[in-house]
Image 1: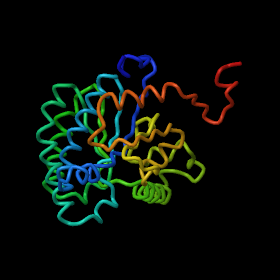
Image 2 (image 1 turned 30 degrees about the vertical axis):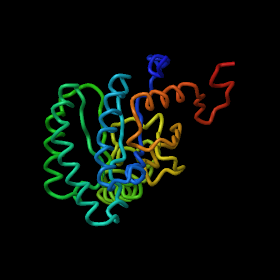
Image 3 (image 1 turned 120 degrees about the vertical axis):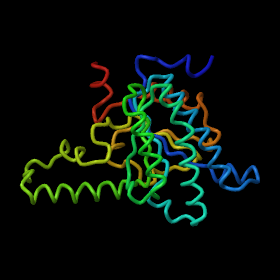
Length: 248
């Protein structure tokens, strides 16, 4: 029996976040250039999106390119940007066909103009889709996001748009890149590394964490469903006791 068949379809996570790690290591194991790993990673992205849509997961956020990734070798960054343009162009028709909406979070202004143009086209074309929302975290990091949020709050405080007493845990999400998007129920990281890597630090305060040794190009539909099934077998207490959660 597949993992998909074992999932309780009435309790799928609303939002799944993914740190896609291992493209370079996968390529190295195949004695290939890192660029081939990134190309194979695009195929894994397609599989993950299709799997999320099949399971009726409302949101899937993919950590696509971090602010720290700008420090990689120039040629690799150029290759990644070119691959991104090609992938967006190739995938947009299928995204529309499958009723999948695309959103982007991150410091988009740092992206090359042609990359921004390709993304803008995809965002506009999929804007009316009502199925699963795919959120691409591009040129993103939590430190960038939280710094930007603090600056915006300070500006609005100075302008009198908010008062000091207005600043609480319910206000801060209104200044984050994920405004209007529910926090992830589960964060998946591939590649065997056990760290968060500056990703959605505010939003994952109570997310379930799931780590797998699978490198991202190896991650398939059943891999996602296995993670969802693991999530469904956990008890989420949010600071309460087991007895409070169960009602006993």
